[in-house]
Length: 230
Image (cartoon, rainbow, N blue to C red; front, side, top):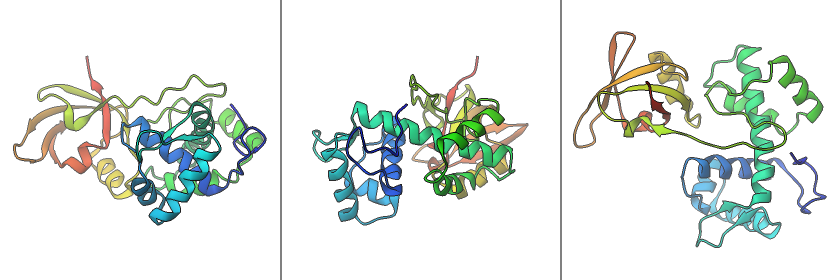
């Protein structure tokens, strides 16, 4: 993978804001969520004009394509840089959880701060100490050096058929309170739950786990991804 801190390949200085923008576009695009100026501004906690300026900079340096109206997508080169940032972020999340014992609802914000400062040498050492992990605490795949990464999210729990057994593989980590609630119910990557009933007219989805039934609203079920268990 390319060194995302180097401006030699595309002439752009990789600030924290640039890295956050690339990672956000990468993750949201992987989830099938269109990235516009307003959605990027909301995700980054900046004003729409600030996000607009950022997208124009990224497009000018060949990292973002905005040919589809107001939607921003990463170019091949932009995706290469974004994967490197995502790898750094997810390895740090794994280190914070497994080595320092931070709960999974806290590691995202901490990794967001550290990812802009950690050196490649230190990151390689962290990877080695962790045993070359393939996924972070939220089940997100960690890109390997050299590429070949696919940001596959699988089936969302809110679309799983009633009556199926559902293997949780990933949980979207953008909502700390939701992560705490799901952890309290025991819903994490690797567990299998039963989809019992979907209430009509936007009602909750009932799932059964460890002998207990729980009602989950759409804000929660849309964060949980996986597949039908065999």
